[in-house]
Amino acid sequence: MNKSGRFLTIISISLALLLLIIVRVELKTQAAPAGRAAALLLSNTARIANTRSRWLSQQPAQKEKTIGETQKNIKVLNDMPASQLIPMMNLMSGSLGVKCTFCHVNKDGQWDFPADDKPEKNTAREMIVMTLNINKATFKGNTDVSCFTCHRGSNRPVGVMPLPVPEPTARPAGVGPGAAGAAQPTADDILNKYTTAIGGQAAIDKLKTRTMKGTYTLANGANGTYEVTQTAPDRFYVARGSQQGLAEQGFNGSAGWNKDGRGVTDIRPDQLTDLKVEYQFFRDLRLKEQYTRVNLRRDKLDGRDVYVITGVRPDKKRERLYFDAETGLLRRRLGYIETPLGMLPDQTDYEDYREVDGVKVPFTVTVAVVGGFSTATRKFTEIKFNVPVDDSRFARPAVPAAKP
Ligand code: HEC
Ligand code: HEC
Image (cartoon, rainbow, N blue to C red; front, side, top):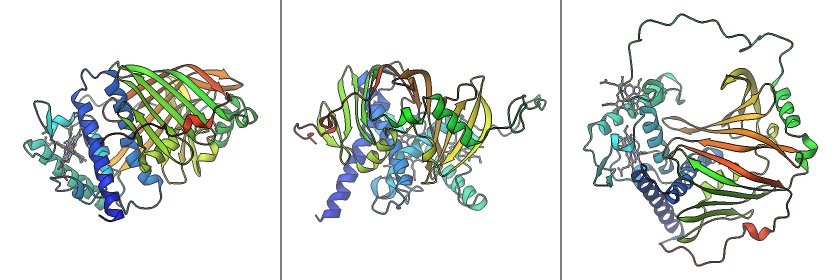
């Protein structure tokens, strides 16, 4: 086998393994022990990573196999990149408010994804074709219409409006452009206010390392320990503990690795691209420099006034940042992952800001994504800046490689 042949084989095997993890986790959703849960957290990240990095790395995924090449019974998604399969399955499940079993066969705990026994699967194929056509014919090929546009979390979209039709209500005061009061701030003002609110540029610029210790809790109640060590600009070490043991990940500036009970493996390049964004040292500390274009509007979040900045990143990806109008602190970060069938949102909420070495940081962080355990809350008991961190923390552990 030549070099590129071998490379493709490795990619296919990793994708198959990833799928296996997802499927196993899906089976155990009801009573998942924390270890599975942690595995899912990782695989969730991986799934997002798959899509996100494709759009981050400007180059088209030329080397990537298509869904048609990697799966058994594909009739409409043939030409799309293999890494888009699971994000699209998550998008379809989430849009209809169903689990994988709505369209796929599961006999005594054994999945048969290629099987066409369920009529819903074929309906879904027709719907995929329709959705792609609508976007092509009417929306210049953008993904303006997704499954969610019609389905809104239900398998039966409602086509006739319910009565009585609600009376149009006036815009609540203080929301929207031209709201009461003095001159409106600009997006720049809000970003500067945030920098000041968390401690000021000088305090931020002094930061070089960070260690965080705490716990995570998934939506189904499973929980464990969560620990992060970072040095600027992008080295990280993450450890998730559960009853099953420790799952670790690290990046030493050039190579990334995973370690769990089965051994040590490399983090796939596409997944690493994503983790490097997630664990970038100044990700929530230096916001202004991350966007090429921004615009501003006012809104409410949980009853409080917020400024919402929509930022466009150099890779054209959009992000929404929600700042508390009073305190100036960042309360929500909403990202969009593009798939051929529509956008998959991923959301991070920040609460319980406390001052550490002159910089305010959130001690509660809630991450919500589509698929599997969609929500995880991390509560930190300790965050420290500028504690000396030895580079060996990020080095690949010297233990035997994982058994295949
Ligand atoms: C609304 C229906 C629907 C839901 C829900 C759904 N799928 Fe699918 N799935 C499909 C369709 C349709 C195809 C085949 C696409 C094609 O023919 O191009 C497919 C194909 C697949 C395949 C490829 C099978 C092969 O041919 O080898 C896998 C794997 C898969 N789905 C996994 C999942 C997982 C995991 C979930 C839950 C997260 C899920 N699907 C949820 C409709 C669905
Ligand atoms: C333009 C609106 C629209 C879009 C977009 C749309 N659907 Fe539908 N879908 C419908 C309507 C309407 C029905 C109900 C048809 C009926 O009641 O017979 C339906 C029914 C279905 C059903 C059958 C449900 C059942 O209980 O039998 C499936 C499965 C489905 N859609 C999947 C999808 C998927 C997957 C997508 C995205 C790829 C999608 N739909 C996008 C309008 C839409």
